[in-house]
Image 1: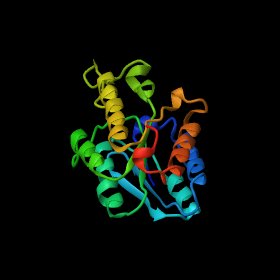
Image 2 (image 1 turned 90 degrees about the vertical axis):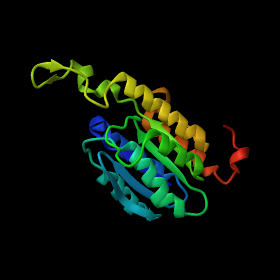
Image 3 (image 1 turned 135 degrees about the vertical axis):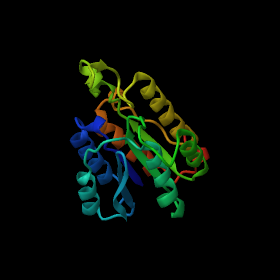
Image 4 (image 1 turned 180 degrees about the vertical axis):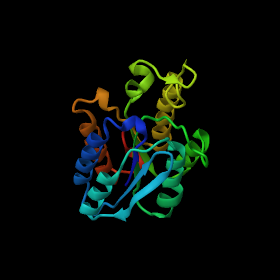
Length: 210
């Protein structure tokens, strides 16, 4: 399992909650399950390579920290191409994000979707809507020269694209999108729901309930 965590500035208000929910998720995996922890902001950072050492995984999760930018498409391609492509057996990505990409240079919406569809990996996005946290939704941003405008990566249109992207990632890989705001128990329960689905991965994909 790759835990792929969005640590862009949009998540400054919820990173501690995310970390604790992710730790709880790992505790529910089987002892033999290996986890890779990757965070992304403007860059992609591998916090731990594949390991089933729970303390090492917990330390990596809690090491995640807020940065600037959001290279989501780069992070998805990096996870699939550099890590999961060389692994045999059951594999999945648990992707915590708002779906908004602002700084990817190596990958695009389409290229990352195409790679995900070709991969033999399930992707389970946890969609956390950070639109409410954006500065312009707290009264607007005054830029140099006295101009009020919406910064890149924070418009309603970009959030709509982000939701569509996560829907397609899950649809094309056989995963499912989890939305904490519509899940009783919130973020912690969303992670728990994915853990339950991962425990069923021994069932062939075409026999699982979509």
